[in-house]
Length: 238
Ligand SMILES: Nc1ncnc2c1ncn2[C@@H]1O[C@H](COP(=O)(O)OP(=O)(O)OP(=O)(O)O)[C@@H](O)[C@H]1O
Image (cartoon, rainbow, N blue to C red; front, side, top):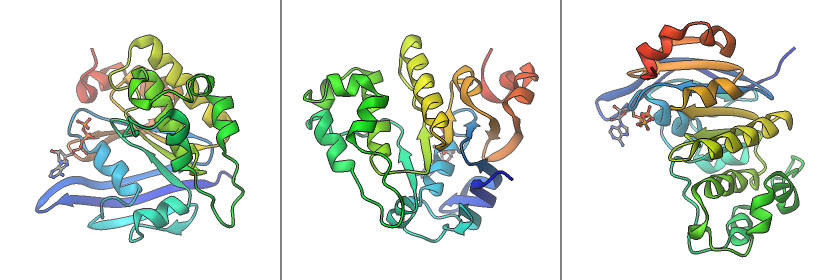
């Protein structure tokens, strides 16, 4: 039977009195990619930040490999194997590639520390070539690889990726897609927030579409692909 990596049930998330996400439920199976899609302001980043413990939900549960985490600190959730690749990358621009990776390194007690510098460099050859270069001088695509590499150095079991294709040229988006496929082949479980519909459908197994904080469609990537009008209605894709 498939193992549930992340299981979210009936989540409600508010900013003060304003409700950003309502009754969100989803299940991410181990080794799969779940794409969370929707227009600007749909509630995607809010949901992802809540899964990472950066925001507190008002209602609902979040389970990571069966363990309830919605009241834990971001640090405890990260130690439990959940790592966020934040929107805008948030690397340290004045540090080198190597230093960025080193400061992100975290040994996790009780779990095999399967990610290290060597493995990150083997996955992203470009980072190895540029390891002495200041991160702020990397191209957008390279910075995205570094942001993913930093998350990997924390030995995640679940990666939460917030719009990794943002601001990247199509050729580089293809590289990001390839990287996601490589990580999936390594059995990482991934929630991918995207506005790039084609990238999301290329790599995802499951798709959840949000509109103004509510789920308007959920299903396999194949079933979403078979509903072309959905993209126009909820995602602004023409
Ligand atoms: N810090 C905040 N305080 C108040 N409201 C917020 C805050 N952050 C987000 N919101 C609101 O919550 C809703 C969901 O925003 P969110 O950033 O999650 O959307 P998104 O789907 O990630 O959009 P985008 O693709 O533009 O990042 C929006 O209406 C937004 O204005």
